[in-house]
Each structure stands twice: as structure tokens, then as C-alpha cells.
Length: 293
Ligand SMILES: C[S@@+](CC[C@H](N)C(=O)[O-])C[C@H]1O[C@@H](n2cnc3c(N)ncnc32)[C@H](O)[C@@H]1O
Image 1: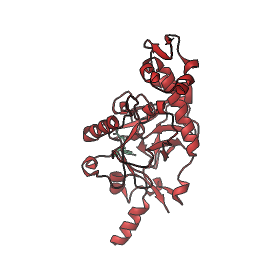
Image 2 (image 1 turned 135 degrees about the horizontal axis):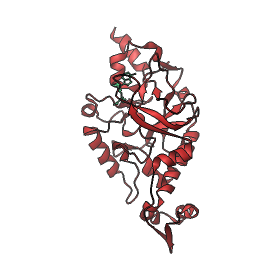
Image 3 (image 1 turned 60 degrees about the vertical axis):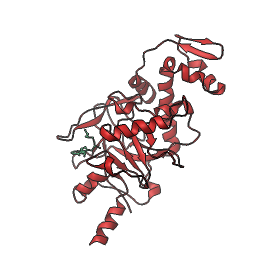
Image 4 (image 1 turned 90 degrees about the vertical axis):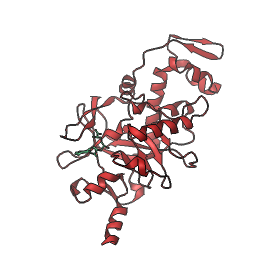
């Protein structure tokens, strides 16, 4: 009996630990099955990376006047990438760049770059709290539509206290956990890990997903609700490890930070990918269970 339970438990590689524990025998029709770990990804890492860089670049450029101090500290070859896109209110002084505040709207940057916007509001499911909706444009099939923010725990990191009554613990296919709770102890831990990992003046992660107005508008994926028999999944989760070559000036929009200070592998992110075209006004639904056979 115990053996059967353990083997079933191990085959649930993905998603929400407490939710799965409570619903193991319910709603079998909402299970997602993949035949092998390697078949879990529906788009390539290259496509994920290109799409994130495209959006983060737009966020950086539309906020350039607030980035001047940071930009001035970057190597010249990186600074020169932004010379052509400096807004008019920014004036060059020698090698450095000085500027006045320009209005910054990350939602606009998202719409202009990706062709859609998303936001959190009351779910269309009763008693499900908030959910994430497409609020402008259409999300094309295969697009990165959201990111799952939070502290990243390796299998050997302790997470007991943070996980008590916490519905936001996401389990990756390899057992890495991401705590996307924006309240309580989870919030305090994320802030301190993010601050710890700064490379001098360079932020390596974003903390604004802990607020109602994240700088990176994709970083609301922890609010996506589970599909049901009536509402099929229109997005799925996919792991993405941030490569070393990721532009340093854009790391500030990554909504994840390692819990441990000595992690030797690349930073884990999780993105949500559209399984079909998703129209303006539709709520995003994922699949909280994935079975790997
Ligand atoms: C990761 S959170 C999602 C965000 C949540 N809706 C909120 O506003 O905090 C997971 C929790 O959302 C709720 N939830 C998700 N999908 C649901 C569904 N299909 N029906 C009812 N509740 C759901 C459950 O309370 C679950 O523990």
C-alpha cells in the first residue's frame, strides 16, 4: 500500500505540493501527462530566452532615464548598445549618461513588445481567489505569457516553515521548489536573498513582484489557477535556467533568487507558455498536475 502510494507520489513531478496532496484522487481529467522529463518543454529554451530578452530590453529602454547611474557603470560595449535608443530627455555627458525622469509603464512596454498584456483580478471560478487574465491583445500559441516568481530552493535546502499553509510552493520537474508567496516569511526571505545576491551596483533579481505593480509584468504566474473539467488548461509550466551569457543589465527583471548562497547551478526560472491562442478577456488556467511516465 505504502509502496503504491510512494510510486504514485514520485510520478507527480510537477507543480503544487499541498494542492496535489489534497487532490490526488480528484479531477483525473485535469492531469497532464508527459512520457519523459525531456518532453515536458513545449518551446525551446532559445525561444524562451529570446522572448524574455525582448521584453526586458523594452522595459530597460522605457526606463532608461532611471537607469542612468547603473548604465554608467556598465562596460562601454554594453553602454553603446543603448546609445541609439536614448530618449530625448536624456543628455550625454562624456562617456556617461544623465537624464530626467521619463514616465515608465511596464504594461505598455509589454503590449508593444509582445502584443498582449496580462493582469491579476478576481478569478472567474468561484472561491478561487484571484487569477490572471489577458487584458489586451491576443496571446499567440507558443508565447511566453507569464513567469513564476519566487525564492528557489534546491532539494537539500530546508523549506519546512515557509511551506506551512503555503499554496504557492511550486515543484519543478527535477525537485527544485519555488516559493511564489508574496506575503509573510516567504516575502522576507525573498527580499533578503535578492539583496544578498546583488553584484555591487547591479541588481540580479527583481523584488517588485512582491507588490501590486511588478516592474516585470510577466511576474504574476503564481496567481494562475488550476484548470477544471469546465475550463481547460490554456497555459503550461516550463523550466528555464538563466544562462551565464544573459545580459547583465537585464537580470534586474528576473523575478527569482536562490534561497541558498552557494548554489553552483544556473538560476532556475519557470515560465508559462500558451497552449493555444488566448484572447483578450480570457483567464489563464494551468495544470497543477503533470505526471511523468
Ligand atoms: C497558487 S495559488 C493561485 C492563486 C490564488 N487564486 C490566490 O488568489 O491566491 C493556488 C490556490 O488557488 C486556489 N485555486 C487554484 N485553482 C483553483 C480551482 N480550479 N478551483 C478552486 N480554487 C483554485 C486554491 O485555493 C489553491 O490553493
